[in-house]
Image (spheres, rainbow, N blue to C red):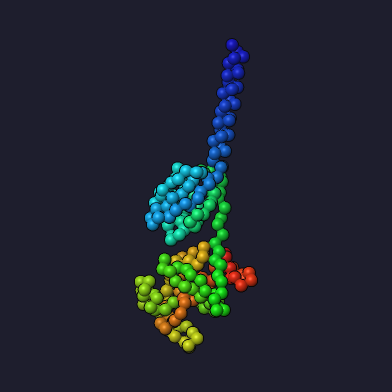
Length: 225
C-alpha cells in the first residue's frame, strides 16, 4: 500500500514536470506568419497555418495585432514591438508572453539610374510621387503646385530663402507627415516648398541623412540607419 502510494506520487510529479515543460516550450516557440492578402481595410494573415481576417486594432489568438495598413504593407504589433511587412511577406513572431523574437526586417530602397539621375517612385503623406536623389539638397523639395495637390497648407510654414540652379528664391519650410521610399518610411520629415520648382521631387538630406548609401554596379542602395 505504501509502495503504491509512493508510485502514484512519483507519477504525478513526473506528469507535473512534463506539463510545465510543455507550457514553457509553448511560450518560446515562434509563430509563423504570412501576409496573404490586403483588401482595403482588411488583411488576411496565416498564423501557423490558420487564416485570420483582421481589421486595424484586431488581434489574433497568438497575440499579434494589426496596427496599421499602409498601401501594400502592414504594421504588426507583438507586445511592445512593431514591424512593417509587405504583401506576401513571411515573418516569425514569439508567442505572446514568451521570450521568442522575430527577426528585425531591414529597411532598404534600391534605386536605378535614369538618364544619369537616380529616380524612383515613392510616397509623401500617402500621395504617390517621383523622387530624384539630390545629395546637394538640404531638404526634400517640392513645388507649390504639388503641395497644393496634396492639401499641404505650406503658407503656415516658416518663410526662408534657398539657393537653386536659377538663383536665390523664397521658400516655405514645412514638415511632411510621412515619406516612403522602397521599404524605408520616415515620419515628420523636414521639407521645402519652392514656388517655381519643376520636375521631380528632390530627395534631399532631410531624408538621406537617416540612411546609409552604397552603390553596387549602377544600383544605388539606401539602408535605414
